[in-house]
Image (cartoon, rainbow, N blue to C red; front, top):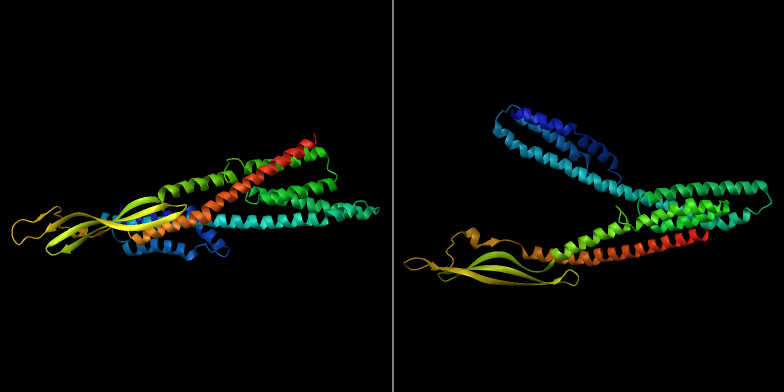
Length: 347
């Protein structure tokens, strides 16, 4: 295979890859909706780079040339993969934005029911048939809208369980105003909300329980990774007269990720070499490799920063998240129990 054929084949794969085409269209569509969007010029640069390779190396036919540009092709492919990863993040951002929008609209319906319930209730007792009919029509429209928004909101997960609980209360009020039979409440309305809260506290994808479990698992990883330790950070030398001494320099980490860390440094001698006036070199370490004698393995400041950052993240984010999810799970269990009691009251 010639270099030209290789490049043409690989570039054709990239430029016609559905992932690449989809990435271009999605990024163009999303760039105004989130700061995480990638400028479409990034993707254009990928295509341009491939075409540039054809232009520069199109006449070559050496196998060495193929190897030389293979890394460039791999890099371009990695850029596409990076873009796809960013697109996944964009989807999350947009999805969360849509959830917020749906929740806001759902809340507006709930507020309408709360504000209008007593007025509607009084209006339905009016002797004016047309007025009662208009009121029933208004209530029906709100009831239909509430159902749609509640179901949409429920389909986007469990973080807004509080709004779903309020939606049930509002829908229950509307069912009474519309004289829905108890059998409907018992066999249709309540089971639908029961299912939502049951899933919220079950170990299923995206549930409150599974989210808490993933955070707890991650907290354990952090606890294991960031703990008391002694870290070899460098190997150095020190000249004293005609003798060169070798040292291993350590950073000692004490404490834990919950309470924080303290740091101290020390060194241990590993040998020496004395340059004689005459005769053989004497010493316990006869290495003359400068790279070995003066080797920086890890930067102390970076190590300490990573430990401190992990501690702050653990305290400020991990622990509050676990506590919040625990309270949310408890609330959902309470809602679930309340629905069971309400349903039992219809027996």
